[in-house]
Length: 133
Picture (cartoon, rainbow, N blue to C red):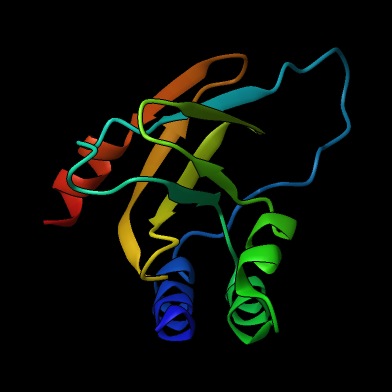
């Protein structure tokens, strides 16, 4: 099921390619931050996995791995317990946030966000979940 979820995510992510490489140019450029907050009710879901900006090739590698959870963290994903948060340093611009359930290995929610240079964008699981429904 995790493999199917990753392949479905690959199709979605074709439209949102991340700009993860740093560029040259004058002056110091401050990174942006996406802060994911796991605010779903504990009765709905416990721990979740959060990952940003996966390309189809990366999603395929995660899905085909012998240990998908290890591949998930190696690809930059983080596991977040209910009531906790995780921060991701990113370049400014558009980003795709994907939340998975480690129990079912399925996608819980997914959505896009934009963050400006030097800013922090807070993304709540409940908002992403509402967008998915």
